[in-house]
Length: 205
Image (cartoon, rainbow, N blue to C red; front, side, top):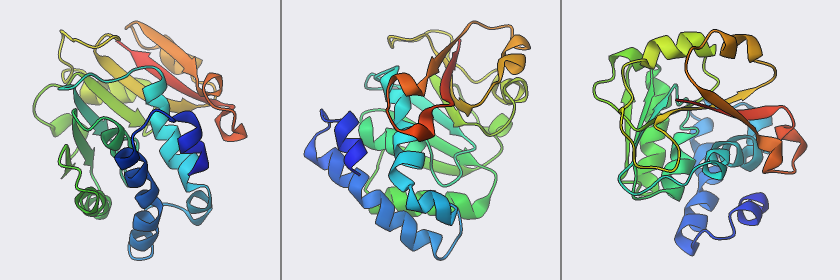
């Protein structure tokens, strides 16, 4: 938890308290429905929460922004972002029922009224969104096929509307297959922890 406060010292007390509650909530649900590996639970705040919040290092979502989290799993990056940006709307989708159950229970416990979790395949989600976020659920070209018609063309944030994708390793071959503009941000530019040395954020727009 210390690293959350280190990098997000501007966060108010209520935000920090909700972040603090995440680990015991996930530990409780993980004992019933395994959504996070034991190793990752040991490094929960770094591997899940801080990783999710790296997105806030490239953009501060303005109030009223609509964000779709595809393949959210247990709620990452959507839940930490929803805590940090309470005036934005988040839709968290995953095709696995038990994961969505955990997301809904965590959101309810934290009183995150800006979160809606749905069991659905990305391509079947109705509507359009300002940003689509995800954490390495599949290869980028395949991901683009799932969500190609779901982004609002006109935005009002500092970055153009599009995809913000958390991904590790070398994925230059995947980017070459994508015909849209993109920018890659190494997360190691923002955080000191060794976990982030190979982790990146990709903005596709």
